[in-house]
Image 1: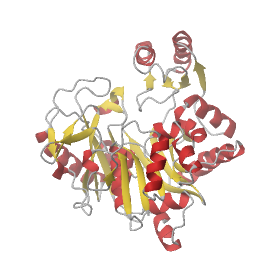
Image 2 (image 1 turned 30 degrees about the vertical axis):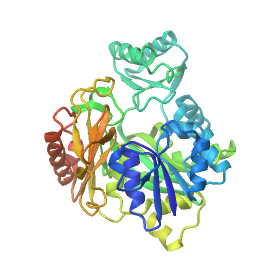
Image 3 (image 1 turned 45 degrees about the horizontal axis):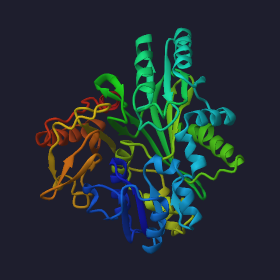
Amino acid sequence: MRVLLIGKGGREHALAWKLAGSPLLTQLYIWPGHAAMQDLGERLELPADASFATLVEVARDLAVDLVVSGPEAPLSEGLADVFRQAGIPVFGPVKAAAALEASKAFAKETMRRAGIPTAAYELAMDEGSCRELADRMLRSSGGVVLKASGLAAGKGVFVCRNAADVEEGLRHLYHTGMRDAARTVVVEQMLIGRECSYFTFIGAGGAAGLGFAVDFKRLEDDDRGPNTGGMGCYAPVTWLPADAEQQVVEQVVEPLLATLKADGIDYRGCLYVGLMWSPEKGPQVVEFNVRLGDPEAEVLAVLDDRDWLAVMAAKSGLRVPGDVYRAATAPLTQAQRAVAVVMASAAYPFGTETTGQVDLPMALFACLATRGQATQVFGAAVRAAPGNAVATGNGRVLVVATRGESYDAARKQAYAKVSELAKHWPAARWRTDIGKRVASEVD
């Protein structure tokens, strides 16, 4: 199978790593990719702003069997529509379905129609009405969440517990580069419980669950500081009830797919269900995303030994040997735990300063050579540097993902690697408490 992977971040590095390990793979092409992915496949020499039409032509010339889209932006712009019209299968939803992430207003309306449990909400079309709605909801319930309806790289959500929080959220939404994403803002009640996410691959033959993970959105330890794209993650989620997946499938996934189908929308790709879980109310949906999370993709990739390419191909309508598909969709049997820690630049999440950047030896990534080991470093905001090295960029730069026999063991391995990397890159910032609470509860 010849596969074209679209994307260039840590999630796509993890996907490339998984795809490269599949016995079904003949050739992996990557665009645009980054320097740390070079040992996993062939990076296409195309402009960073290449059109979908150009990508289709290249894919035809290379006899690509399947296109896998990592990020949400190309999907929201119609990448899957263009490739499918050209007769090339895509693992990723069409534009109409990608609106579940590209428009939080559309997602909330779809949930309402489908009867999916979620927070009560109202829509604000300008800063004044947003402030008014937020203040009213804050007074009535003691908490409010402001969400840019459009795509905001995971930074468009502001959890507000007082008036000062509301004003800070409004500043980011209406007075920064987030303005376009915040043309419509979802103002919703704050849900109570513990947050987690569920991931499933959807398409021909139904859904195949990957499982749950917990992402750490706040920048600093103890969930302080601004929201980010994610500073770390762990999986599996052992504090959930035994029937958690069944509950999510029955109360969320199936009603969602039925509602989309009634609207003539065929969903094929990964569905990310962000959840707030409480013992009293069970799962309530915080958000939908139409791709794997980041850093959830990295932690799930390290934890899960199953063949993701086999599932992606089958869900995209390609023929996969029955025994291969059954093995790829069988429940996970290993009892291991996995933890991922993000190392970001000092200015993250809102700054653009580039001080403290360094070159890191390519050997740190050595993906295929270290595949059987418990620790893997994935690159995100990196670029090529002289001397077989990569240079750190701005934003989330590295993700250290490990698995072990316990959360505590995985944490120790992850932070040992982080400490090693910090010797090369002293300006890095990271959280020190990823998986700490669950380790104390379980281990």
